[in-house]
Length: 458
Image (cartoon, rainbow, N blue to C red; front, side, top):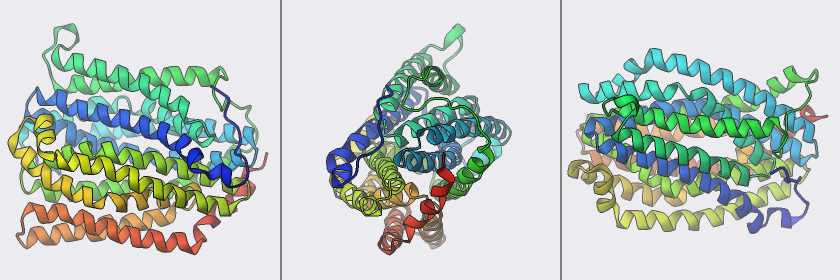
């Protein structure tokens, strides 16, 4: 499993084949997680609408945790990829070890905060009392596993930064296979003769992640992966500073993203539980297409970081443009298929005609936005791979917070229908696209990681 090598020079290093070699395993990993997320909704549907609302609401707070972990992931990926591209293997390994320690501490802290704050935070969605109670239970049980999930995410990011996207995909098969089996079984017949409840779906999901992280860490400790534990030196404080400088804007960006989504969902929830549940369900369905974009975004970030580390900014720009062309096509095809079958798929997943009717216009709006999502994935991935994590933060602030939430709030107060609320996401992505294209064309996005390069000395 430890056969990853530093990137070669020339345009061949950023060919479509090289991009796909990183993007497809990453997309597969994200697809597996998305399918399991959809399955959780399906399992919950057998327990009633309150359980479905609980899984959707719990996913929103889980995404807040993922947002904070994304800061560590973004910093680790950019710095490890830069060190790896420059041929500094030991430095890459030290960045990974430091990132794992920070991830574990973050996971424990957010678990405690989630147990204390789940009730008030989920209360923002104005759910029915039964749905709120089940949402709190589901969220708290899943939060018990935040530390191992954070460790797994950082280790997977580190391996991808070293050019090994295949091994994280294999770990994902283990994680999601165990999660799916346990959650399905315990949604029907929980252990010890307990009565079925949505909390046991969360328990199965969490234990699947534990199985994956135990296997991954064991192989890492044994030196069987592309990156291995490194002997400590006196540079930990310097690396922690670099990780903070690159990572904290990404964490704030993702935190703003989730806060904006929660605020947007609050507006949606004013139109009823069916509208709220439909939005969460639609996001899960559309993730089947969006995971392709996530995979390309990761591939672009890794390859841009490696090429800048190798001293080739021209290749760093080229990889983003080539990936963009691939992503537009591969995102649009599954999106159009899903839009064509929007109503029957939504009805099958939720088992509720009212929720399915709300889901259809959401799916149509997202389908129109998919080419714009491709731009955000690829150009945003290039910026993050170069260590320019501040501009994506400003981009989210302008698009999601100001435009989408601002328009949704305005439309709600004007008494417009919920379909107008759903349509604001198109304006959100249009604004973010314009800003990203302007930043990418300026070449200023390449400067941040160049400034970090001296930090990556042996």
